[in-house]
Length: 59
Image (cartoon, rainbow, N blue to C red; front, side):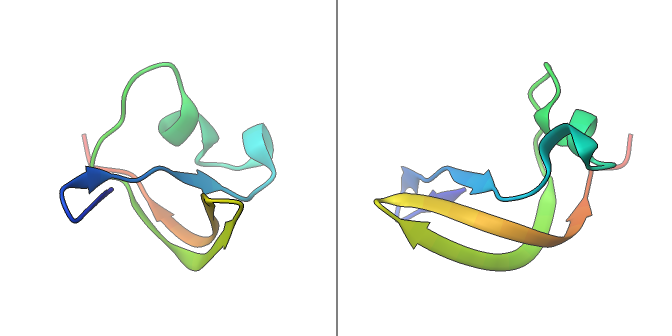
């Protein structure tokens, strides 16, 4: 995500590969235009998001 012309990384706070969307979001290919809704937190300069909704782009 870009904020003020800077790329900012958000890390998902979830169960990892146990999530149904895991392969589509965290798989080996670069996936763009993923929409994630949830609660954002920041600790030690690292931003995380606890997803409540994940939408992958339609193919």
